[in-house]
Picture 1 (cartoon, rainbow, N blue to C red):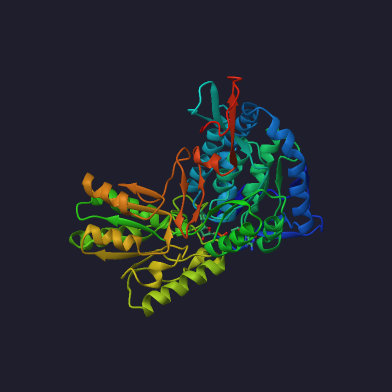
Picture 2: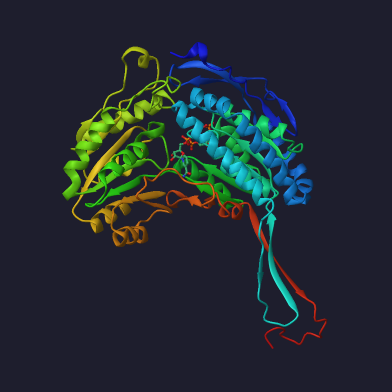
Length: 499
Ligand code: NDP
């Protein structure tokens, strides 16, 4: 096991009004390594007072930050991007140590975090507004973007570097001041990123960082009426709770919630491409992805061939500590995650699904020390609980379909609508499926994972609303102010301009 070669991990602190400091109660909480269930380090246990102080600091910093020319804000983000790029290896190791994913995957995640910062640094020189034609001569009409004020950003543990950046960067570049609260399983990656932003010269109070239990610290942020936009990524149930608070406060929100994503394999799909893609989509990050391909819907003519190839390839995936070279599938983030997977394996068996691979927790040798579960494949119908609920583990189900049309109906027969994919060589089938699939992000000849930072990302149905990434990410953190400038100096008649 790699403990001796593992890098030192930081001890997390809060950042409030430009000062790194412990929680006001002086307490800390443990951060664990899920591959070994050992304590890696500690993070500051923030209090409700700390959450309030962070919002107050952001409120105080907002006028100056929003008044700074956007290109100057972009320069600070560009410096932060450079620093993140210089620290990819260190950050990736922290991701693997506290979240568990295999190191090459963690490197990819951190590179995407970098790309997000770099993209929004460039937005500082765009932030395009819109001029619209006027009904009257000698009149200029346009809408300009205004930041909302204080953004509270609450993020999950499964992409501890990427998801904070997806929200932090559009919020900052458009002139908002921010309070970031990361998940309690993975506060150290976010802490290190916040340190790098600080080093890049983010002004005092513009970026605040609080850690501690969501039910307390996240709730204190959500209940604070001085927060103008709440961005939340996490479970649909938590999202619903926060949406109720947001509704009561008439507050803007971005909700990125769960998924139960279909990957359709049409009868004419190229198997040599579809099989590795399905593997990566279903089992990377041990299936703990909101976009994981957790239903693989296969047309009957290719069902047996796909199933044989997929199960054989999945059986070869190497499960282990993410820092060990060659590991492809790491541990689940906590013991409760393994128990949830075991529960869903039981549901699958009880409801008559056919278990094709795996189905057990891994307890042999070094794996006994961590939260490991076998890569697991079922075959069954779409109505089963394993096909309707987000399991968030290394489990997927092959669902047979009689036609591509039926495959799309099955794909849509779920309460979520995040990502969906289809493998086919036929352009017409692909585009018809894209039109009909009820998912906000769709893929052709590509698994439902691996989004690019310059394109919008988000969900429909119970997967949430609002869009992160690309120019769309800016929409969530700004409102449009419309400006009419009449330079005719003409006397305006009654009912102008509709007289
Ligand atoms: P949770 O909803 O449990 O937690 C997410 C964040 O919310 C954490 O920071 C958590 O803090 C905080 N939180 C928990 N309860 C509250 C509360 N009552 N008020 C305010 N904040 C709270 O989700 P997970 O961390 O378990 O993340 C996994 C989920 O995220 C999956 O369902 C997945 O699908 C979804 N997800 C969605 C994505 C998308 O873009 N649609 C992307 C990635 C994940 P703490 O950690 O301290 O409990």
